[in-house]
Amino acid sequence: MRKIATYSLLGCALAATVSLSPAYGQSANASAPTGLMCDDSLKTAFQPDAQTSVVLVKQFRAGEIIRLAKDNPAMSPPAAQDLCLVKLNVGPGNPGPVNAPSTSKGIGIEIWLPSPAKWDGRIHAMGGGGWQGGAAGQPDQIGGIYAAIAASSEGSVTSTTDTGHAGGPALGTGNPRGDFAMNPDGSLNKALLHDFSVRSIHEQALKTKALTAAFYGRPAARSYWEGGSTGGRQGHKLAQAYPADFDGIIANYPALNWSAFAAGMVYPQIVIERDLGGKALTNAQLDLVSNAAINACDAIGGIHLGFVMDPAQCRYDPTKDNAVLCRGDGGTNQTSDCVTRLQAQAVNKMWYGPTRDGSVPDPAIDNGWEPIAGKHIWYGPARGTSLWNAFFTRSFGFPAGLANAGAGSSISSDVIALVTGDPTMAHEGFKNAKGVGQSKFRTLSYAQLSEIISRSEQRDATTFSRLSTNDPDLSAFRAKGGKMLVWQGYNDEVIPPQGIGRYYDSVIAKMGGVNAVQSFYRLYYVPGNGHMSPNGTANPDANPPVIPQGQFYQALINWVEKGIAPSAIEMHSPGDKPVRRSHPACAYPQKVTYTSGDPNTASSFVCR
Image (tube, rainbow, N blue to C red):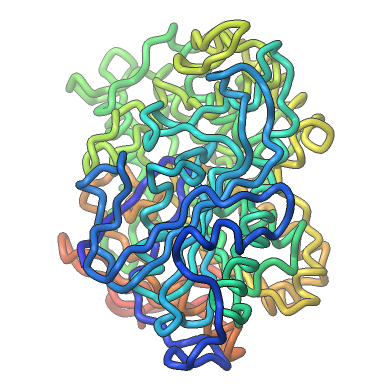
């Protein structure tokens, strides 16, 4: 089978093409009770409630190309086995003018069902990325090809959702934008925000389970959720709000603390506008400083790894490093990539994260990993992280400004537009009857951005349908036997890695300590890894170990179905240049700790 990689900023984890045994108590070869047929008769036979309609039923035979009329042939693999595609729409949506982003027919859900003889008895639902959107509810395009690949390779029922609004690359409208959440009069679209925050994923769970039971004549033995970024936030939201929906959840690099983190992503641009007169550092300058940070903090056992094992301990300060400072600022760097002391301090601010007045402490005192207090609002990226999204730019041709400190974030500017009710605050591409995006967020002062973040946090429960997803009470999820696994790259280019640690600490405080929480919920930090990328650092030759594709999902299955809890997870580098490494990933709050021996070998480390 051709291997298709589906990436999106703030996106779902790649579907794992792994071979899995049938769920506990199920036989893949057992004759299923009489169920539904994969034809148009399903449109009338499956009517779970008055708000749900079947948009499309399509059979794909083994070997047939998985493609609908408007799909890109280059992203259309053959089916490894017979599959039935069912697309649903769940109302009521949001009425309004034709072509207004805030107008919606409802929540689109796309479900892939293997043949009864090949079904493994499981549901493997999948999350989305960014503002999501997409073609899940469209009859002529596939919304989640990664879900089709997983259903084809695993034999599990898979599903995705557009979270209640269309749009995005699949529909030719560019990256999904947050303008769906603004009504034509500039007010917040609370209905679609609620769909995006929580209702869509609960409906995805309910409808996937209902269709599975109807199609096969028996319910699924186990149901799992897997997602990253927005999909990671969705996984946590399900555990918090609908703990009975899934037996096991994978919720990687989650976009939690949305109110603070999403608006705060624009902070590097505000630093550039206010401190540097709007002139962004070049990619080469950003790499010079970031790699200097790596070199200052990556030594283990007498060698330089090329990535930082524990960025919380890295206190590198470029304002005191003559090797990166230009000669005019007392440095020794004579290249065009040198930085001024003002630029070096700007990078310190980016690493530290948003503050109420643009100040930043000496990294020797607080490097951005201390608890949030005082003027500090939220976190920034770890030292050594690529500040211009190098991995995706080099690997897939994404614009160098996608996560560039000089370009800001469209998600962040969308949130600012929604909080202020001013569409012109957003990046270009944000559409509303009151106006369009004009990137006026660039005019904000530090104090104004701080006030917007504060308003966003204050309105999280009343207006934004608790998008922050930071409720630490997971007692109901634990009580019903749920299990959750999370991994977070230390060098995430988009979501500051400190955020999930802060949330996990709050769960520990709420629910009886580390041992009590680790009985059902485990977090693993992965050095050097980025936002769904194997290398989030500024060093293209870092080659850090990664959690092998499919291993996390198999670990979750073993935990749920066999009671085998994961401990340290051995990771391996995806390539052998400059050297192939193996390291353990440790369950937080333990950290990977070097003892002795070869620093490139897992046996030289312990978790403590």
